[in-house]
Image (cartoon, rainbow, N blue to C red; front, side, top):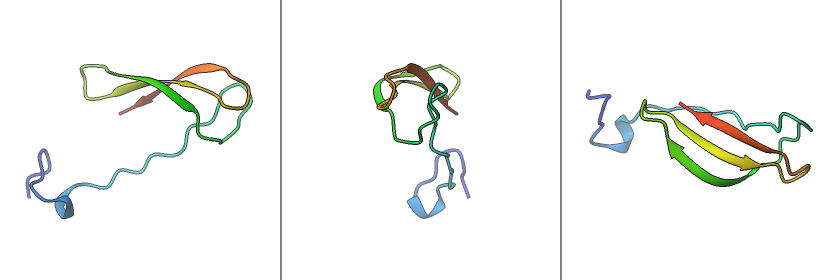
Length: 62
């Protein structure tokens, strides 16, 4: 099985990501994502705004 570039979705690995929480108010309500940027190492930084307290924060998805 080729895990770096699977040819079928059935062969693709499963990745679980927990829902990010706002670092200020702790709400689990999904933030508003305003921009995503690749980091060059396979990870992505997503800029987000909390819908409850309006804090701006970054989420890194590896």
